[in-house]
Length: 106
Image 1 (spheres, one colour):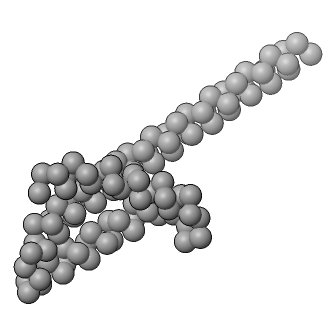
Image 2: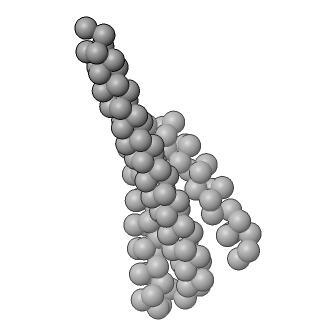
């Protein structure tokens, strides 16, 4: 009977460790994806800011579209929901801090 208990405890411990590793990996991947999306938004915003003074150029409209797509991607990762005012407010504050250093340089 003791062997069964020890084996069951070992099995439960290994499953728990595997679950923790899986969660850690998912959290890490999500954090990396969020950092990548943030960098994409910063790059898209910088490109748009550079071109927005010349609306006749098609590149300015492409840059605006790219900025919108990056913004939307990041918003969805952040957990954006159309009717959740609290999350939307937090996201807007996040974007302001994210893009503020870039805006000061312009």
